[in-house]
Amino acid sequence: MNSNTTSQWWAKSMAVVRILFGVVWAIDAWYKWQPAFLMNMPHYLSRHIQGQLPIAQVWMKMWVAIVDINPHLFGYLVALGETAVALALILGLFCNLTYVVGAILSFIIWSTAEGFGGPYHAGATDIGTSVMYVFIFASLYLAATSRYIGIDRSLATKMGRFGFLTAIPGKALVPASEEDVPQEVEPSYTHA
Image 1 (tube, one colour):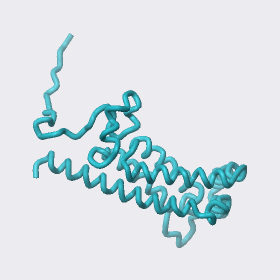
Image 2: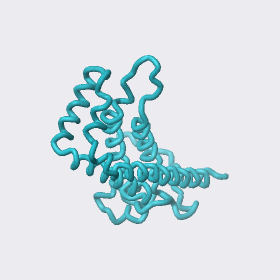
Image 3: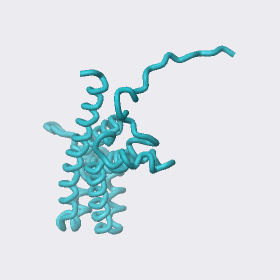
């Protein structure tokens, strides 16, 4: 297997990982659309405040106060956000934007509803799952996972200056054939 074939296999595999991750987000989003979540949004945010470090309590109480302004609106925003992330992951649509939004949303969920994975005490065994999602989104970003399977591949050249929103800004990264693979060139240095 040559390096180009290995690279293509890796890119296709990572695209499948992206799609499966999108399915996980879609299942999670489905739960967010349920009345039990939408009616109890403040409870989900406040249940981990006790036992947290003071700085974490301040952060979490701030979010509870914000959500208390209109809990249903925030419940719908979370459900809509998770649905959008799920669809974008599955379709390979605006992947760079999706990875940033997904990482931020994951961090906010981890630092509020999951209570930073705490409170930490003797016998605590988990730091929460959403923090891991931040790293998954970073990995998907670095792998440019919509190079093979995704709408970004066809959108990349049509987006113009907004191409940075796709995982393939400006042009497709995957060569059509091995002859199209750019060869490494020794840099030439000139002295002025």
